[in-house]
Image (tube, rainbow, N blue to C red; front, side):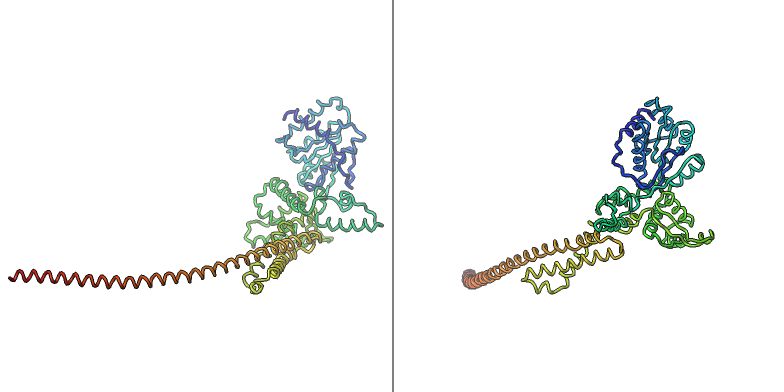
Length: 482
């Protein structure tokens, strides 16, 4: 890899403004003499935690002594172990006078480079530096740390926001003696139980935070599990993720789970379930907790409980509908009820001349249909927030009822006008029919009289001609006889 690209990346990171980053509760020591590793699920805030550490260092340290590298930067692909040596050379070519000073290296998502631990070991042993590394895979980092970096590192797990951090990110003052503050805290707690604590979605509204959480799940599934562990049975993995994320804090027997999948016709071995669960644990997506028992055998023999790293994952899997989708659900139910109304309810015909009554009846049926559809879809989601329920209920019922009510009323008025026009047209056609029938009858009556006269005239003419012919032949015969 060209050193010019590496120099550009180093310089850009040193000029980047990181003052907007909010501090987390987790305390990371700066000068321990060891490699600091931060591990955790994707999007949990590891990168911003590095930014926070860099902010603190910039207050007492020359920014040129700080190097931040994100190994998911597309300018670094493909990156190999030998390129890491070029990275170190590029830095000291930029700042040769820093060779004898302490330098702080921050390597983000370093697990993307194969054999990265060998470079970190050499850097730690030969240079005057402090190293911070992050990664999204527990298995890779722990295995490599345990072999090459043993005794040289301190690991810290980074989780999504705690509730106190959630309040701080939303700029809510925690004054427990203020009723206003307590009301905001209670409201924020209800929101926290639904959204979870991923920093990016704290201030997202309900229309996009669900989609964002689902994107997180897809990212973990494809980047941290399927690609990293070469998973081939993606259908089984998706089913397993769906099951685990929607059954948190419940006892799960993996043997029973294997039998359930087998009975559904899925092709798998008993070890496959254990391996996939282990992969999800390595990606920090979920955790399995054994039953409390003094005997390890007893712990292994009993079902475990499953917990996701963030409650938002359960929300994302439990409530796949957006507000727009709830609107469509309500509309479909409303349309069904409206169809039943028009097909079977005779009262719509009784109110034929009452536009207001017809409009009211249609609106009521549409509202009932929308209400039933939304309630049925929400009935399996008991923890759905009041605000989201109100939005979904309004979208699924109010708007369809209002729109369909006015539309139906307008259409009923149009139908009445068309009926009046049709009645007038029918009367005109009836009158035209009578007049035309009279004309036709008179025409044929005159035609019959004329035909009778013509026949009589032709009959007389034929008889006269026959008499003349007969006379002619008689004269001929008499002349021949003579």
